[in-house]
Image (cartoon, rainbow, N blue to C red; front, side, top):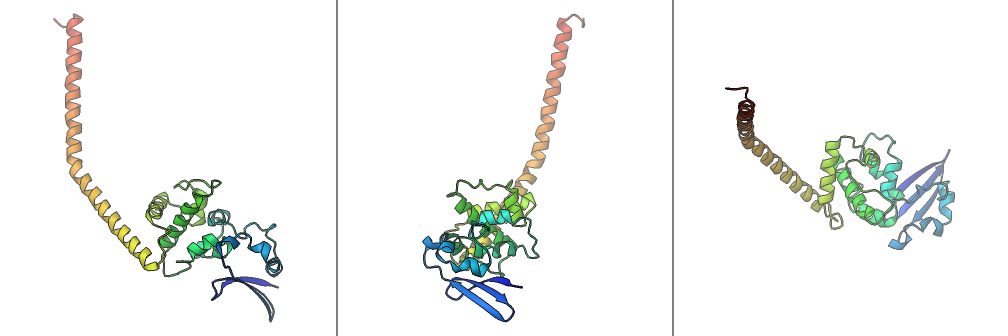
Length: 233
């Protein structure tokens, strides 16, 4: 029985390895430029033989991350980060080159990986009119990332939009940005809580005052109507 493994090589290329017993057939595919991304299967005739598949029959081979996440949203994974890491070898080179600046890296948290994936999808969806606008209602995409709770979706999507994804080419920069974002969110939360505490009694007092004035207007109006109708002498 043959098995296939996708491995990264030192030459930053994509290694495709087929193992059958003690025999191994290795084909190394070095990607030299951005233009080779989607034409790679056509220019290397050995790939279908080694992979045991053909791009025409398996359209998941070299597809945008957005489409792959949606397509594999029902896949099971013990580690949610593998939902993204496992797809890196199947996306076009122009997308992979950006993602591989920081991924795969298991030192990153699940939230950090999801934020990077969302920032990546947001960037490339701008140029692909066939893809929907990403919102908290993008169920298929978020299920592909293993994120179900709407509050979590909103928080991660907001952070992804705030991230300078193109300029984020170092892990240190990304982590510093995340730390700063955490601090800003905590400060904003504390400020909102403070406003609620200050506005609470005032709001309650305003409501009581309104009810008193409204009751007086009703009583005066009713009295005037009764007087002019002759029911009060």
